[in-house]
Amino acid sequence: MMKNLIKSILVTSVIAVAFLIATPVQADPPGMPGDHGGDGDAPPGGGAPIASGVGILIAFGGAYAGKKVYQHKA
Image (cartoon, rainbow, N blue to C red; front, side, top):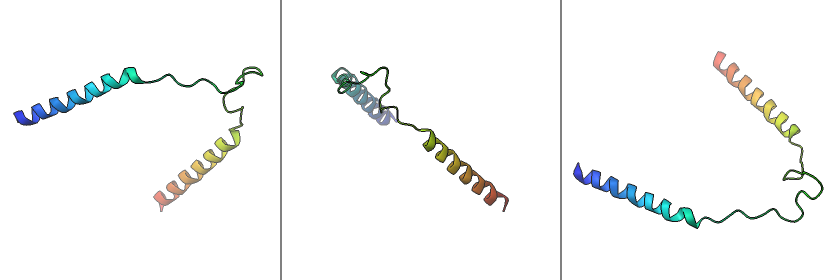
């Protein structure tokens, strides 16, 4: 019992020390490339439309849910 307690405390302290050492070493994220936002307030990605993709995902989700309901009734 005491051996497991000491082992768990040791592992926990090693993990805590590893996180405390690694935290100050993290670098800042890189800046935006090129002339981002030069033509106004353009969002990252160039303002690509996502509406059709969301519609496809909703349609597939509805079809999958319908299949599951149909299988549950059978």
